[in-house]
Image (cartoon, rainbow, N blue to C red):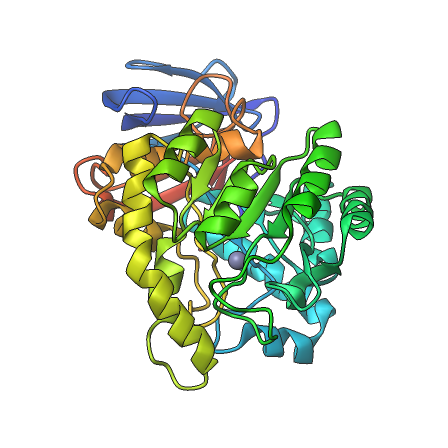
Length: 404
Ligand SMILES: [Zn+2]
């Protein structure tokens, strides 16, 4: 599953690759890359190793992109017809093992950073800690723990259900105490939910509750990300300190402009509602109905965001109902391209833009000297055709070769 750990006496030299420079929208042809201690230490047209032992990889004219990032996963779910019930039956202990398997499946296709935005018992926070402490080998994982939502609100199954400002403050402080890297709130209802509050047109958390959460989190420089579908809920987030808006299916032009002005990032998650809208037996019928409504408006919102110059970052909602038990970031990237986003911007959204949200852009998101050696080898140029992301030859994470 993993290659050798590169130690101080060893280097890896990758020869003859074309680097995809996502920042400059350019291909740097026929380059070599030198890796030591998991970092890129040199890039150039003709390099040789400096240490006694140099492991040489022939890049075969492949195109190299930086490791990708998915900012919206629920690793404890299974992507089946009703993941919430499955998790409730299995319990959080199996949930955390499943979460690890799902995280590793991402790493194998080159998704080297993940943001889990909702897990039962905050289990993704513990998984992230186990990976960081080196208890287990895995991708770079960030986690919000439970979702802060109203009583019976969206995400209640993975939620921290609150009522009022005192509760909002308590939830914020408890999640930060537990080690949340970012916080996730539900500003509106969603498609998948069983309680009475899940009406597509309704807001859920009040503006005052949102403000309480964001101002407390900002004391510790912790970002608040939000699930928001309808326009009123999106506006409540935009005006009350939320830094990342997920889904945003009913975002209008004015609100998109406001988001661009304020530097609020948009994670569209286009594919998940399309998949949920499929009439698959066993999936909650009202979720299918609502997803159809969302999917109808989603493309327009996405194009509004692009026109207004909103920063867009990649995310999928992987493992939610009827979404399958596989990573979906590449499928999402293909759909973003089909809906009209330039391929280079799609690539930026799943690399450098996502890295900025996670705060790890000093180490990830681009292929540059000094950054982590997180590399995905592609047979063909993804700027020409985004579907080339599917034709992978190899993944390297922090200098280690990752095997399927
Ligand atoms: Zn989600």
